[in-house]
Image (cartoon, rainbow, N blue to C red; front, side, top):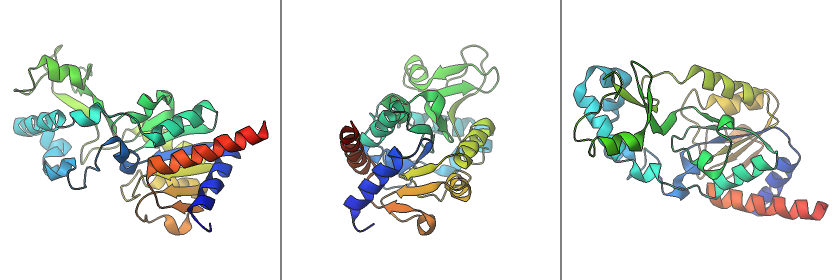
Length: 261
Protein backbone atom coordinates (compact mmCIF):
# COMPACT_ATOMS: atom_id res chain seq x y z
CA UNK A 1 0.00 0.00 0.00
CA UNK A 2 1.21 3.52 -0.78
CA UNK A 3 0.54 4.90 2.70
CA UNK A 4 -1.22 4.10 5.93
CA UNK A 5 -4.50 5.65 4.75
CA UNK A 6 -4.52 3.38 1.71
CA UNK A 7 -3.83 0.41 4.00
CA UNK A 8 -6.80 1.32 6.20
CA UNK A 9 -9.10 1.53 3.18
CA UNK A 10 -7.77 -1.74 1.79
CA UNK A 11 -8.36 -3.54 5.08
CA UNK A 12 -11.88 -2.12 5.40
CA UNK A 13 -12.65 -3.39 1.90
CA UNK A 14 -11.19 -6.81 2.70
CA UNK A 15 -13.42 -7.14 5.76
CA UNK A 16 -16.53 -6.09 3.84
CA UNK A 17 -15.81 -8.64 1.11
CA UNK A 18 -15.21 -11.49 3.56
CA UNK A 19 -17.67 -13.67 5.45
CA UNK A 20 -15.24 -15.74 7.52
CA UNK A 21 -12.79 -13.45 9.29
CA UNK A 22 -10.76 -14.68 12.25
CA UNK A 23 -9.23 -12.12 14.62
CA UNK A 24 -6.12 -13.13 16.56
CA UNK A 25 -5.21 -10.81 19.43
CA UNK A 26 -2.14 -10.48 21.63
CA UNK A 27 -0.92 -8.18 24.40
CA UNK A 28 -0.76 -5.17 22.06
CA UNK A 29 -4.54 -5.28 21.68
CA UNK A 30 -4.94 -4.44 25.37
CA UNK A 31 -2.20 -1.89 26.05
CA UNK A 32 -4.59 0.95 25.21
CA UNK A 33 -6.79 -0.35 28.03
CA UNK A 34 -3.94 0.35 30.44
CA UNK A 35 -2.64 -3.22 30.58
CA UNK A 36 1.14 -3.40 30.02
CA UNK A 37 2.66 -6.35 28.21
CA UNK A 38 3.69 -8.91 30.86
CA UNK A 39 7.27 -8.70 29.59
CA UNK A 40 7.48 -4.91 29.22
CA UNK A 41 8.87 -2.46 31.83
CA UNK A 42 6.20 -2.21 34.50
CA UNK A 43 4.70 -5.52 33.38
CA UNK A 44 4.03 -8.48 35.65
CA UNK A 45 7.41 -10.17 35.11
CA UNK A 46 9.29 -7.05 36.23
CA UNK A 47 7.79 -7.69 39.70
CA UNK A 48 7.67 -11.50 39.82
CA UNK A 49 10.03 -14.31 38.88
CA UNK A 50 8.50 -16.42 36.08
CA UNK A 51 10.25 -19.48 37.52
CA UNK A 52 7.78 -19.36 40.42
CA UNK A 53 4.94 -19.85 37.94
CA UNK A 54 5.74 -23.24 36.51
CA UNK A 55 3.00 -25.81 37.04
CA UNK A 56 5.33 -28.23 38.87
CA UNK A 57 6.52 -25.54 41.27
CA UNK A 58 2.96 -24.43 41.95
CA UNK A 59 1.77 -27.95 42.75
CA UNK A 60 4.60 -28.93 45.08
CA UNK A 61 5.37 -25.67 46.90
CA UNK A 62 3.10 -23.84 49.34
CA UNK A 63 5.44 -20.87 49.07
CA UNK A 64 4.99 -20.76 45.28
CA UNK A 65 1.22 -20.84 45.72
CA UNK A 66 1.53 -17.93 48.13
CA UNK A 67 3.47 -15.98 45.48
CA UNK A 68 0.79 -16.86 42.94
CA UNK A 69 -1.89 -15.29 45.10
CA UNK A 70 0.30 -12.22 45.60
CA UNK A 71 0.47 -12.12 41.81
CA UNK A 72 -3.34 -12.19 41.59
CA UNK A 73 -3.60 -9.34 44.09
CA UNK A 74 -1.35 -7.34 41.77
CA UNK A 75 -3.61 -7.87 38.75
CA UNK A 76 -6.61 -5.89 40.00
CA UNK A 77 -5.98 -3.26 37.32
CA UNK A 78 -6.23 -5.97 34.67
CA UNK A 79 -9.46 -7.41 36.07
CA UNK A 80 -11.16 -3.96 36.13
CA UNK A 81 -9.77 -2.77 32.77
CA UNK A 82 -12.27 -1.65 30.15
CA UNK A 83 -12.29 -2.54 26.42
CA UNK A 84 -10.63 -0.14 24.02
CA UNK A 85 -11.47 0.71 20.41
CA UNK A 86 -9.96 -2.53 19.05
CA UNK A 87 -12.17 -4.76 21.22
CA UNK A 88 -15.24 -2.62 20.49
CA UNK A 89 -14.54 -2.69 16.75
CA UNK A 90 -14.32 -6.49 16.68
CA UNK A 91 -17.55 -6.78 18.70
CA UNK A 92 -19.30 -4.41 16.28
CA UNK A 93 -18.07 -6.40 13.29
CA UNK A 94 -19.37 -9.55 14.96
CA UNK A 95 -22.83 -7.98 15.26
CA UNK A 96 -22.58 -7.17 11.56
CA UNK A 97 -21.97 -10.85 10.82
CA UNK A 98 -18.37 -10.33 9.72
CA UNK A 99 -16.53 -12.30 12.43
CA UNK A 100 -16.13 -16.07 12.48
CA UNK A 101 -14.29 -16.13 15.80
CA UNK A 102 -11.67 -14.46 17.99
CA UNK A 103 -8.53 -16.30 19.04
CA UNK A 104 -6.70 -14.53 21.85
CA UNK A 105 -3.49 -14.94 23.79
CA UNK A 106 -4.81 -12.49 26.39
CA UNK A 107 -6.20 -13.44 29.79
CA UNK A 108 -8.07 -10.19 30.49
CA UNK A 109 -11.54 -11.08 29.16
CA UNK A 110 -11.86 -7.73 27.37
CA UNK A 111 -13.41 -9.21 24.23
CA UNK A 112 -16.34 -10.52 26.26
CA UNK A 113 -16.63 -7.20 28.13
CA UNK A 114 -16.81 -5.44 24.74
CA UNK A 115 -19.81 -7.56 23.78
CA UNK A 116 -18.27 -10.42 21.81
CA UNK A 117 -20.06 -13.73 22.16
CA UNK A 118 -18.05 -15.83 24.68
CA UNK A 119 -18.71 -18.90 22.53
CA UNK A 120 -16.78 -17.24 19.70
CA UNK A 121 -13.77 -16.31 21.87
CA UNK A 122 -11.03 -18.93 22.11
CA UNK A 123 -8.79 -18.06 25.07
CA UNK A 124 -5.58 -19.99 24.42
CA UNK A 125 -3.94 -18.93 27.69
CA UNK A 126 -6.99 -18.90 29.95
CA UNK A 127 -8.78 -16.13 31.85
CA UNK A 128 -7.60 -14.30 34.96
CA UNK A 129 -11.15 -13.81 36.27
CA UNK A 130 -11.56 -17.41 37.43
CA UNK A 131 -9.88 -20.00 39.66
CA UNK A 132 -10.68 -23.71 39.86
CA UNK A 133 -10.15 -26.44 42.46
CA UNK A 134 -7.75 -29.06 41.13
CA UNK A 135 -9.46 -31.77 43.21
CA UNK A 136 -13.25 -31.32 42.87
CA UNK A 137 -13.16 -28.88 39.87
CA UNK A 138 -15.34 -26.31 41.65
CA UNK A 139 -15.00 -22.91 39.94
CA UNK A 140 -14.81 -19.53 41.70
CA UNK A 141 -14.54 -15.91 40.62
CA UNK A 142 -11.07 -14.61 41.47
CA UNK A 143 -12.42 -11.40 43.04
CA UNK A 144 -14.79 -13.41 45.26
CA UNK A 145 -11.93 -15.56 46.58
CA UNK A 146 -9.81 -12.49 47.30
CA UNK A 147 -12.65 -10.72 49.14
CA UNK A 148 -13.65 -13.82 51.11
CA UNK A 149 -10.09 -14.44 52.31
CA UNK A 150 -9.34 -11.01 53.77
CA UNK A 151 -6.99 -9.84 51.04
CA UNK A 152 -5.24 -13.22 50.83
CA UNK A 153 -3.17 -13.05 53.99
CA UNK A 154 -3.10 -16.84 53.72
CA UNK A 155 -3.28 -19.16 50.72
CA UNK A 156 -6.99 -19.97 50.19
CA UNK A 157 -8.21 -23.53 49.69
CA UNK A 158 -11.38 -24.85 48.07
CA UNK A 159 -14.49 -24.08 50.15
CA UNK A 160 -15.97 -27.49 49.29
CA UNK A 161 -13.14 -30.01 49.57
CA UNK A 162 -10.05 -28.15 50.79
CA UNK A 163 -8.21 -28.79 47.53
CA UNK A 164 -5.66 -26.55 45.83
CA UNK A 165 -7.11 -23.56 43.95
CA UNK A 166 -5.41 -22.74 40.66
CA UNK A 167 -6.07 -19.70 38.47
CA UNK A 168 -7.58 -20.58 35.10
CA UNK A 169 -4.54 -19.31 33.26
CA UNK A 170 -1.86 -21.39 31.58
CA UNK A 171 1.32 -21.74 33.63
CA UNK A 172 4.81 -22.25 32.22
CA UNK A 173 5.19 -25.93 31.48
CA UNK A 174 1.44 -26.48 31.21
CA UNK A 175 -0.25 -27.65 28.03
CA UNK A 176 -2.73 -25.33 26.36
CA UNK A 177 -6.36 -26.50 26.68
CA UNK A 178 -6.66 -29.23 24.05
CA UNK A 179 -10.23 -28.54 22.91
CA UNK A 180 -9.65 -24.77 22.67
CA UNK A 181 -6.42 -25.23 20.73
CA UNK A 182 -8.00 -27.71 18.33
CA UNK A 183 -10.99 -25.44 17.72
CA UNK A 184 -8.72 -22.43 17.12
CA UNK A 185 -6.61 -24.40 14.67
CA UNK A 186 -9.71 -25.60 12.80
CA UNK A 187 -11.10 -22.05 12.53
CA UNK A 188 -7.72 -20.78 11.34
CA UNK A 189 -7.56 -23.43 8.61
CA UNK A 190 -11.09 -22.65 7.37
CA UNK A 191 -11.20 -18.84 7.38
CA UNK A 192 -10.95 -16.47 4.43
CA UNK A 193 -9.26 -13.59 6.24
CA UNK A 194 -6.99 -13.79 9.30
CA UNK A 195 -6.25 -10.53 11.12
CA UNK A 196 -3.52 -10.40 13.77
CA UNK A 197 -3.79 -7.52 16.24
CA UNK A 198 -1.07 -6.73 18.75
CA UNK A 199 0.89 -9.98 18.77
CA UNK A 200 4.63 -10.45 18.28
CA UNK A 201 3.86 -13.96 16.96
CA UNK A 202 6.78 -15.55 18.80
CA UNK A 203 4.89 -17.60 21.42
CA UNK A 204 4.05 -21.11 20.24
CA UNK A 205 1.83 -22.98 19.62
CA UNK A 206 -0.42 -19.89 19.47
CA UNK A 207 1.76 -18.36 16.74
CA UNK A 208 1.00 -21.31 14.48
CA UNK A 209 -2.53 -20.00 13.86
CA UNK A 210 -1.63 -17.38 11.19
CA UNK A 211 0.58 -19.98 9.52
CA UNK A 212 -2.35 -22.39 9.34
CA UNK A 213 -4.55 -19.68 7.87
CA UNK A 214 -2.06 -18.56 5.24
CA UNK A 215 -1.22 -22.14 4.23
CA UNK A 216 -4.95 -22.79 3.74
CA UNK A 217 -5.34 -19.87 1.35
CA UNK A 218 -6.58 -17.09 3.63
CA UNK A 219 -5.48 -13.47 3.37
CA UNK A 220 -3.21 -12.52 6.29
CA UNK A 221 -3.21 -9.03 7.83
CA UNK A 222 -0.94 -8.00 10.71
CA UNK A 223 -1.55 -4.91 12.85
CA UNK A 224 1.29 -4.46 15.32
CA UNK A 225 3.61 -1.74 16.58
CA UNK A 226 6.75 -3.81 15.94
CA UNK A 227 7.84 -6.22 13.24
CA UNK A 228 6.85 -9.89 13.49
CA UNK A 229 8.37 -13.05 11.96
CA UNK A 230 5.30 -13.33 9.69
CA UNK A 231 5.52 -9.86 8.11
CA UNK A 232 7.33 -11.13 5.04
CA UNK A 233 4.47 -13.31 3.85
CA UNK A 234 1.53 -11.26 5.11
CA UNK A 235 -0.79 -9.68 2.53
CA UNK A 236 -0.89 -6.46 4.53
CA UNK A 237 1.13 -5.11 7.47
CA UNK A 238 0.06 -2.00 9.38
CA UNK A 239 2.52 -0.74 12.00
CA UNK A 240 0.28 1.10 14.44
CA UNK A 241 -1.68 0.92 17.66
CA UNK A 242 -4.53 -1.57 17.78
CA UNK A 243 -7.32 0.73 18.94
CA UNK A 244 -6.38 3.67 16.76
CA UNK A 245 -6.04 1.48 13.66
CA UNK A 246 -9.29 -0.41 14.18
CA UNK A 247 -11.20 2.81 14.90
CA UNK A 248 -10.05 4.15 11.51
CA UNK A 249 -10.96 0.86 9.82
CA UNK A 250 -14.45 1.01 11.31
CA UNK A 251 -14.79 4.60 10.10
CA UNK A 252 -14.07 3.46 6.54
CA UNK A 253 -16.47 0.52 6.86
CA UNK A 254 -19.33 2.76 8.03
CA UNK A 255 -18.74 5.18 5.13
CA UNK A 256 -18.68 2.32 2.63
CA UNK A 257 -21.89 0.84 3.99
CA UNK A 258 -23.66 4.22 3.88
CA UNK A 259 -22.57 4.65 0.26
CA UNK A 260 -24.08 1.29 -0.61
CA UNK A 261 -27.47 2.18 0.88
